[in-house]
Amino acid sequence: MKMMKEYKLKILSILSANLTNPQPQVVDIKTIADSAELGLKETRLLLLRMDQDGHIQSDMDGNYSLITPAGLSSLNAAQMSAPF
Image 1 (cartoon, rainbow, N blue to C red):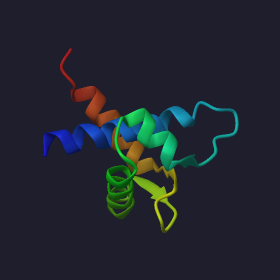
Image 2 (tube, helix red, strand yellow):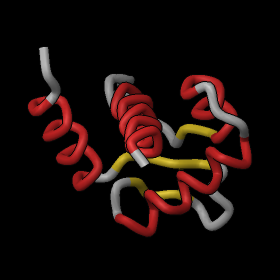
Image 3 (cartoon, rainbow, N blue to C red):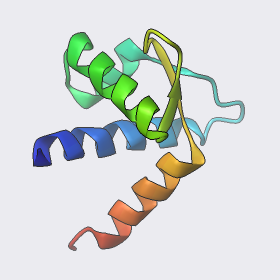
Image 4 (tube, rainbow, N blue to C red):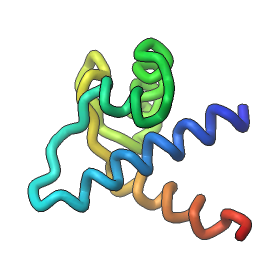
């Protein structure tokens, strides 16, 4: 369970970094999977679950995703509570 949370935070970090682009675009699943060091199947399942939870917004198939304000809030809270 802890590992799943770490992967979710990693995905939120990847999608959050996308916001630094002058014109953020949706992030494709392959980019996310490669950056998170996960397989496509596992990444798709996580993305669809995170979409259901409201942390990201993803297309119906989980191929393209963006972080939501709720996702940013969760990421910030996790970063604030992380031990130094």
